[in-house]
Length: 264
Figure 1 (cartoon, rainbow, N blue to C red):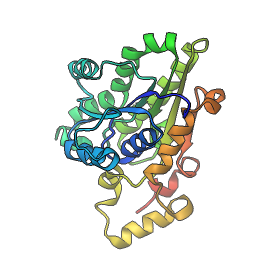
Figure 2 (cartoon, one colour; figure 1 turned 120 degrees about the vertical axis):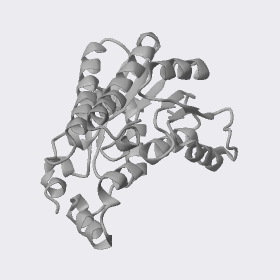
Figure 3 (spheres, rainbow, N blue to C red; figure 1 turned 30 degrees about the vertical axis):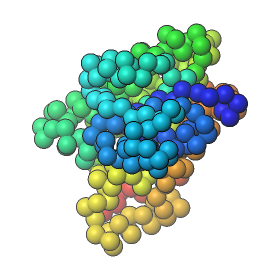
């Protein structure tokens, strides 16, 4: 990774796992393009942290993008004017954040599937023809819920969308067997992000939050930077033999989902 500068596209890069992933690749010297939907202020703050300029520099730029819109994807491609060497499909909505898009449960199901599963497919379809000839890496961020196992009482459409991401990863790996494109999925567990906070932690009092965290594997939340490091490794030459892998990055929650789903 350090021997050549890559063009890296990170969707949903203004906060959480996406922001930490942006930091990793920018700090390694790569050219990073990242997207946000409504987090323009957070995106600007991230660029100030990295390069001292809210507008970015010649190695980092932020781009507004609506994952549910094909027109928005076309506009994004016109803005960045590159085919990424590394595509990281990270943007997603969760069971709480999807409510910002609609109050209707049927529309929430729609947005879950389109944003979480269909938009990564659109991204791949857009860039894959060139990547197949030139080579590249595709990292799809799924979730332990759906990507690895199931959690009773969690939103069905959320798990379905993440299962679709894991399937897409395996399908692409099968189709790309003889092409120089490595495809992986990462399935995080209970990560300390705004999304997990909105869906699970924020409605608990201090005692409830402490009880939940103690039930988790290792008695702690996963940090976004830990997941970003896994993504970085999967983009290294050493990870090539793992192509097609759907990586359980849940600290063991995928092996014992009852720790979370049975919490009360």
